[in-house]
Amino acid sequence: MISTVVWGTGNVGRAAIRAVEAHPMLDLASVLVHSPGKAGRDAGDLCGLGRGLGVAATDDVDAVLTAGPRAVVYAASGDLRPDEALADVVRAIRNGAVVVTPSLYPLYDRHDAPPGFREPVLAAVAHGGGSLFVSGVDPGWANDVLPLLMSGLGTVVDGIRCQEIFDYSTYGQEESVRSLVGMGQPMDYEPPMLAPSVPTMVWGGQLRLMARALGVGLDEIRETLRRRALDTTVSTRTMGVFEAGTQGAVRFEVQGFVDGEPRIVIEHITRIHPSCAPDWPMPPDGDGAHRVIVEGRPRIEITVAATDEDGNRSAGGNATAVGRLVGAVDWLVDAEPGLYDALDVPLRPAAGRLGRK
Image 1 (tube, rainbow, N blue to C red):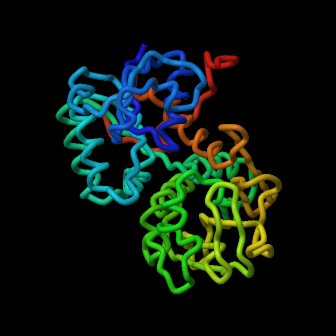
Image 2 (tube, helix red, strand yellow):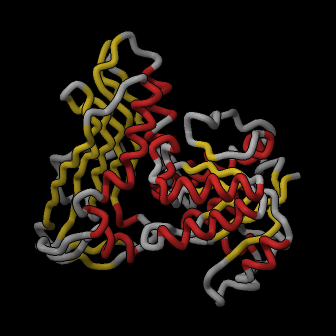
């Protein structure tokens, strides 16, 4: 069994605890928390599993890493603390652990990662013999392995579009929805996640990774952004009231240009209520979905809708992203120490997990 730590118990961390517990080759050794109020609570309680796991959460990072875990699922957010997240991950790698995480956007594509992220990781690998695999939580597989697999089914491929279409009132982080993305804010508010160059920082690595797999170079990466205001005040199930005239929907694209055309595109269409921007693409049902469209001959389109935590689509997306990461741990343990990305790490069947609770 592979001794595994889950670091963080937010949206991603809850799913990670459940995924580690279900994996036949992993042993949940510790759960690290930031909030003192969570320290001492059973991991099964923190992740909503409905039963105890006999693992008490702790905020003692030194003690957990000194115990020498073989793997770490780093689920703490890196949105507003990228330097701290990188330092945490580097520390675990230097300690000899295999680390999987969605939190370090610049490392989605290891070949073009900024030196400030790549070099500390490689130094930690050389020092401690650990490894790192980063894949997105939006989820990563919908912006790399799935579209690339679908492209292989076509005779002629003219372009690839990856879409996230979601009602953000179901997202379990109100502060991020209101402050980072700007839902419910005045239309002259500038959301940090939508500021120029930020979408490219977050999703540009996935565009470059897909381009590399397809054997093409990107001329450039461009961004587009559209925002819509709510026509009327709306009340949501989980986040309360959003006033008329404030931001109610966002649609942006991160476009990879090949030969002067946007050939590889990652697009997000997000709303706080279905009444806002009804002319934009809608999920087929429920609160959200991920869609990949391969334009060409034939034209191929696939929509994926995952649910978790009592039917929540946002939680389902998190769970599939975590499943990709946790499912890679045993492969990484057997591989040579190093820095890996989605083109290196195979997506494999859930061997030994059929029927496990």
